[in-house]
Image (cartoon, rainbow, N blue to C red; front, top):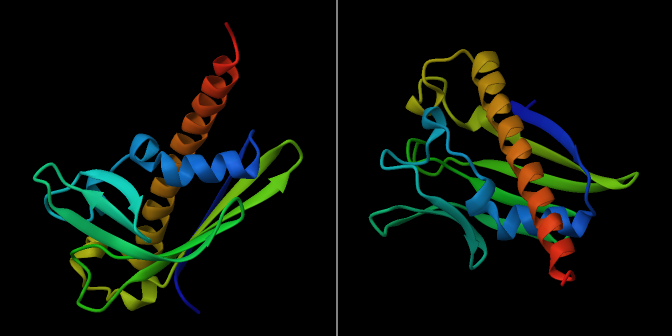
Length: 164
């Protein structure tokens, strides 16, 4: 069985709104974690562009985190994920699901394939697997909280557009 992280959060907004905030506003809600930075020069600004997730660094350089494998607006997003510290040819995979629940959306992130990253890899910071996965899961929880805040801001902005 592959080592994976599984976290979820309910956001009070329709699936399409949450999905759009996830992909279009990632540069606004994403909060870097120095422990899990993509490159030694991070943090940059995250963006989805041309079928991939990238981090744009202040130097102008672009680091490709991964390519988009599945893009189902309002339902599902699957992409490759790698950090510069991963061994060559190694990547993990992130699947984000957007499920309608009551008046909102359950966003579920499954970050899988961590068995491909060797225990001695600098990307794991010497943590035992369970501790590493727990710490990375905490970061995903914080990221989803940021997404919820951004989604709420989006909705408030959209509601205010019709007011005079």
